Image 1 (tube, rainbow, N blue to C red):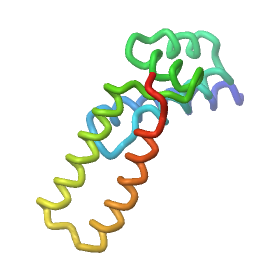
Image 2 (image 1 turned 90 degrees about the horizontal axis):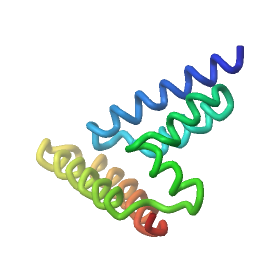
Image 3 (image 1 turned 180 degrees about the vertical axis):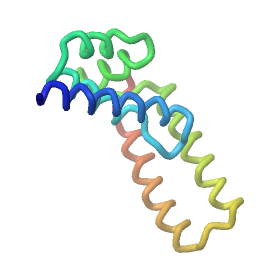
Image 4 (image 1 turned 120 degrees about the vertical axis):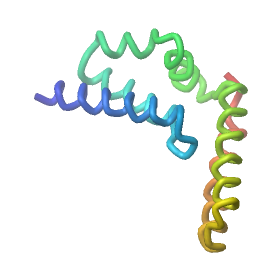
Amino acid sequence: MMRYLFAGLGLLCVALAVVGIVLPLLPTVPFLLLAAFFFAQSSERLHNWILEHNIFGPMISDWQSSGSIRPRAKKAATLSIAAVFGLSLILGAPTTVLIIQSVVLSCVLIFIWTRPNG
């Protein structure tokens, strides 16, 4: 029963990661890492699939082996974060929201850019 639950959670995480490719505020890699974890607990076939995937596999392998993020992914994350913040400014978000958003997004950027390059 737990194998099915973990497999379902892994598939949900992959779906959220795919949505995160399009939506700037939804992270992609953390969901892929969770999916890899859930697949490792439930299905060797799914686990091998995600690790060998042309797009997802290298990101997961980089993180698992050295905690690194590829420079291209860092740049994409930075552009996405800038786009989200810019959109908030354009839409006239309240000052409180902008302050909270700038603090959180700055922390995310600091985390991303202080990781080694993959």
